Image 1 (tube, rainbow over the protein chains, first blue to last red):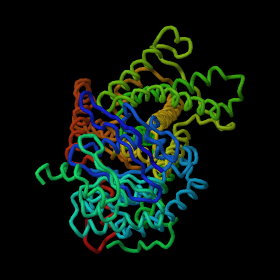
Image 2 (tube, rainbow over the protein chains, first blue to last red):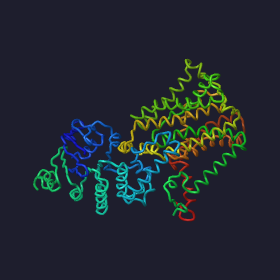
Image 3 (cartoon, rainbow over the protein chains, first blue to last red):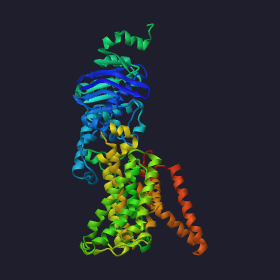
Image 4 (cartoon, each protein chain N blue to C red):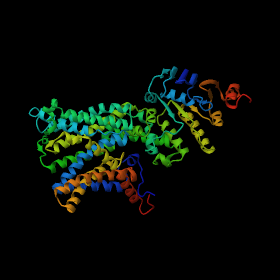
Length: 253
Length: 356
C-alpha cells in the first residue's frame, strides 16, 4: 500500500534518514519506533511531502509520490495527525472536522458566494456524513460546537484523528497519537485506532513511544535508530532483536 | 443553558441566523435601513453612503486579513483601480454601449481587472508573511497611484487633477441624486456582506481560515496554499474594486490622492476596530471609522465655533482620537466590537440564566 524504498534525508551534515526500507501492508497497523531523534517524525514528514528526500522512493498504491506536494498527496488518500496537535484553533470542532472533507467537495467560488443550491447541498451532505461516520464514531458529539481551545488535550487528539478520518483516507499516518495521555485516554485512543482499522479497513502507520500500546495493536514494527533502520518484523521478533534491545536499553542489558 | 435552540435538521443547524435574537437583530437593522433610505436627511444619507462604500472594501479586506490571515496595506490601490476602470470604461464605451446597460458591463470589467491585479499583488504572499507581505502590498499601492498620475496615461486617467465620473444609468434609471445612489449602495453592500458570509461557511472559506490558523496543517488536508492564497487576494481585490466603482459613481470627480495610503490604512483600521474574521466586524468598524471624525467635527464646532483657528486644531485632533481608539481596541478588545455585540446577544439568548 505504502512503500518506502531506500529513503535518505539529510539536513546539512545531519543525516536524518539513511536508507529506510519497509512497506505498510494494506489494512494493517504498522508501528515505527525508535529513541528520541531517531528520525521517526522526519520519516513522516518525508512521507507526507514536507521534506524532499535526497534519495529513495515513496510509493503509494504502486504510484511514485516522492516529489508530489502535500496537498496532492492528501487528494490521493493520505492523511496524518501531528505530534503536537495541529488543529485550527480559531474554529469549532465541527468546522475542523469538515475541513477533512475538503478534497471530496468541489464547490467553487461562485457556488460558495451564492451558497443556496449546489454548495448548500454539498455542505449538508458532508455534515450528515461527518455526524454519522466521524462524530458518532469517535464519541465527540457533546463537544461538536466547542472551539478547540476549550477542549482538554486528550479530546483535542481525538478531534485531530476525526479530522483525518473525515478525509476517508486509504493510509493514515499517526504521529504519537497517545503522547502525554494517561492510561485511560491511551486505552480509549488504542480502541479507536483498532476500530478505524476494522470498520474502514484503513492502512495505519503510527509513531509511538508507548511500547505497550505499540506491541498490542501493531501487526508489524519498524525500528529506527539514528536514521538507520535497525530492525523490522512482528512485535515478537522485534522485541527479541538484540539490536533493538541495545538501542533502547544499552549494551549491558 | 441556551433557550429555545432545539434543532431537528442539519439544515436548521447550519443557518447563519440560528437563533431568534440574531434574527430579530438583523431583520430590525434591515428594516431601519429601508426606512432610513426613504426618510433620512441629506447629510445623514451622505455619511451613510460613505459608510456603505467603505463597508464593501472592508468586507474584502476581511476576507484577506481576517479570514486568510494575510496582511495588506495596499488595498486602496484596488479601490482606485475599480474607480478609475469604471470611469475609463464608461468614457471609452460611451456611444458604443447603450447608457442603460453600461454599468452592467463596466462594473464587472472593473471588478475583474481589480481581481486580476490582486492576483499579481498576491504573488509575494506565497513566499513572505506578516510584516514583509504588508510592505510588499504597500509598494503596490504606491505603484498604482504613480501610474494613475503618470502623464503618459493622463488622457485616460486625468493625471494629478483627477477625472469627472459618469452618472450610473441602470436600464434607463439615472441615479443622479445621493439618495438614489445610497439605495444602490445599500443593496450592493448587503448582498456583498451576505456573499462573504456564504463564502466562509462553505469549503472555500474554511480553507482560508485553515491557512490563517495553521498553514502546514491546511496543506496536509489537501488545500493548495498557492491556489487559495491567490484566490483570497483576488476576491478581496474584487470587493475593493466594486467599492471603487461605487465610489466613482457616487462622487462627481475622483482624484488619485483619495486612494493613497490613508485609505488603505483606514480600511485596515476599520477591520481591527470592528472585528477581524467576523462577518459583522466590517459593519461595526465602518460605522466607527466614519462616525468618530464626524462626531468630533460636530462637537468641536459646537464648542469652539467655526473660526479658522478652530479648524486648524480639529484635523490633528481627529487623527489623535482615531489613533487612541485603535490602540484601545488592540489592547482591550482585540476581536473588536463584534465581540462585544456577540457577548450581548449571547447573554440575551441565555436570559434569565447565567450570563457568559
